[in-house]
Image (cartoon, rainbow over all chains, first blue to last red; front, side, top):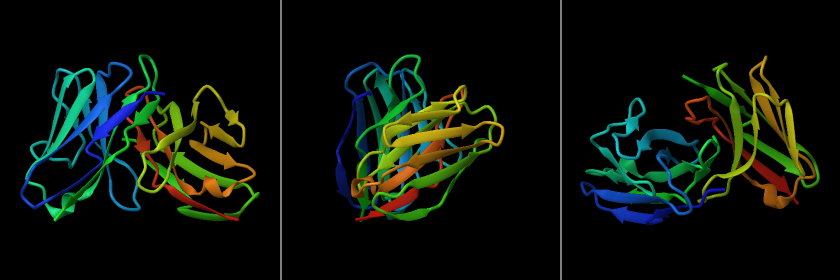
Length: 116
Length: 111
């Protein structure tokens, strides 16, 4: 399957600051990446679909001005949580397809965000 | 949009017994159904998947069955081992390739 990395793995920040999370596809070029959020003991909720070279598509209820997504290259998508608040504390995970013509998604290791 | 329901939310079995997790979906256009295993603090790992043109798929101790008419699919784990303990998620997607996840099942295998 696809090899996906995320950075950082953990981040603790103060309320009001912004945090950037990187998602990289290490072994092939990904035109589409997905960002999920997972609260403790809950399922994965799709936040947005990141498209290389164009605007991200956000799911209903996800504020695009708060969760900024940039997919500037075929191997990198970034999620910036702006003006973070304690309720934004969560596990953020990205995913990519396993390759052209496949519908299998492979996940990054996730980023644990804690906002104090 | 798609809605996926998963049952049970927790499942406790004795080592060596079988475990079955069931999911239902709402969108008849969905045609891809993966299962993921997630250990605490780790990424979801794909363990098996099935497409709508197949009714059953098996990989060693793991099998998945799909009933498109009834819109439900199930994960079967035989001869469970303590290392099978984790949270399992089912998911469904259509040609748009957006995955919708079930609520998860916490499987505990007692030695």
